[in-house]
Image (cartoon, rainbow, N blue to C red):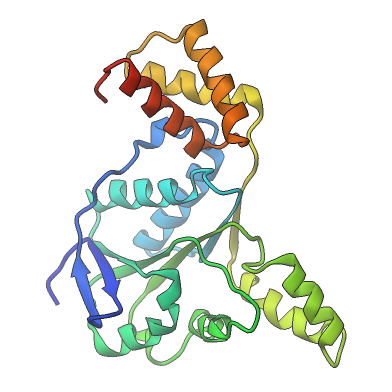
Length: 251
């Protein structure tokens, strides 16, 4: 296999496609996420330098910057370190053992799985837990896994409640499912933004792109919050792009 920084698993072709790092958000634009960024950076550096590290679960509200942090950090490290980033679609996690069995990797591997969750009767979680626990297949290559999800335990609360009501032992089914998230030694949480946080994110974008923040931008941002019904980093970025487009400002 040719040495490359970023590979994406193509399940239809059963191949690893080379993809360049593109459309990576500058980490300095992720206002209010310094602690989360620091944890992931330190964990990644430990992995690449041969020190102890943990697989990480980034969980929390949608649009809060989980994926942007992973992509930004891995892109940054790839400029100075020899390793392979392997992105696997959440629907294809059952293929991980096949990938490790059928392909050879020259470098350490960081596996990125975005927006992972499990529905009722979804058995993929058993296969994924087995992969995390390790096997002879995947022990050939040192790897680190980063997973993003909106659910702390990777599944809906009503699924856990259903397990409690139907399991032979009251907690047997629940513990089986919760044990998957326990396989991640590092949990990094992301929560809802306050109105002030949302405005500060807009201010940060204005500063980065050398645009003067004023009352007009603030008023429009507050109306955007009301119309969208949420306050997330993604929504803030969408507002900023919309504002710049109406003002014919190129980013």
